Image (tube, rainbow, N blue to C red; front, side, top):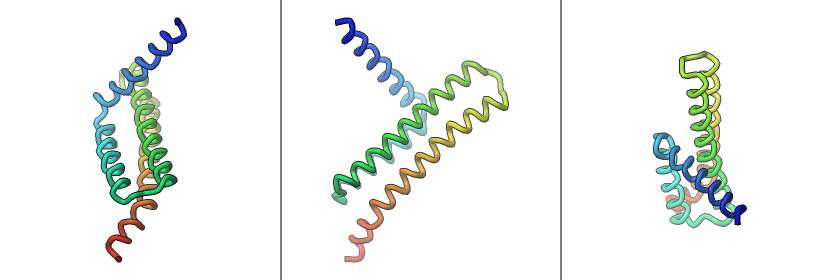
Length: 123
């Protein structure tokens, strides 16, 4: 019983962290809008199972890196509340990881969706 209670508590902490990220990070809302548009396009353009796997993986990587970026920013602010060159570099690196993930997701989306959209206009 204690094991289940501990697992429940760890899930609660995880959801609290996710909720904090959504409350405090405007970029996460921008990503969320892109996700809704992407999912809608996936259904409208009837992407196949393999394409869905790539889309879902890309979404997961972007959201995960955004939340890790948020965690790093919070930690840096805690340990270095004053401006410090190294603290800035750490934050920039974390933000860079999110940017790379978002660019890769965009490329995946283009590879999957552009041919399907072109088919609509060509036929």
